[in-house]
Length: 320
Image 1 (cartoon, helix red, strand yellow):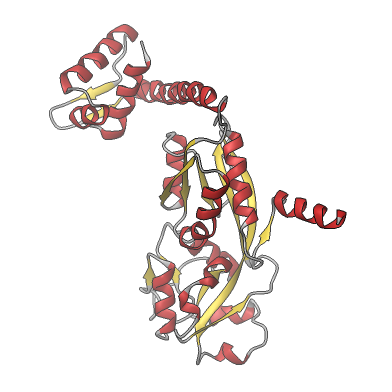
Image 2: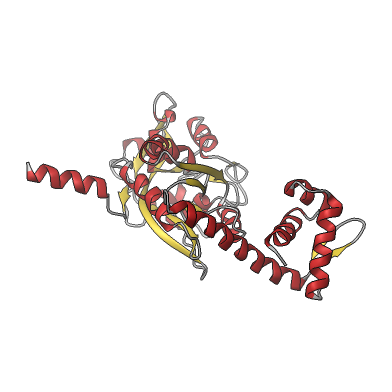
């Protein structure tokens, strides 16, 4: 058994196809198939069940796959430790991020990250929460920026900031004359939600105390796959929606016919956190990445991690 064989097993498990797995590993299909067959003979079990139409991983193969992924990560950790001896913050950092956060946070941190850590290569994946968690378990990404609580034994969470919600509504809406919007006001606010799978939709329902989505009425079918589309619907007068604070910097805030009011009640916010595997070896890189985020947040959100750079500036000013 060697790491190359484990790499082949992982590739077949992910593609469910020996030919595609061979292309992914840059070897011929007979070579890859032969090595996996040798590994199965060595272990005395079938890792894959093969038919003319499909390739399925066996129950024992699933167990072997978990160990294979962990061993590959540890092998990668050896290389990273060697690299860390020269520069602990160098190399690729694979970060997943949810779609309702990515377009508003990433532009704030790209240049500062490049300036502070030029050897760090940020590789971004924008996907929904369930997919990102699955990719974390599969060692396909190193960490994920999420807005939901993750309670899994093998994952660790680093809270970064609380992001308040604002209510966006058409300029001719009855809310325009209200100084403060209460939770009771949201009961008949014609709230537009993102499609199933977006954590922002669930958070909006929780804040508005909605137990389930509307199945009937004119708002029932108005569900969008992006926050930008929701805002266009609001601007066209179809209803209201909740907007995270970072999105308040978007172009829609001017000339779109939309007004936004900050929700002042206690739980009207979402918590953004960096989630990663407890076994991930490059914790210094994650801490550096988190610190860059905190250092470049606008004052519309509440940081949960100390801004070390701002603290140093305060100390220098005090000495002067």
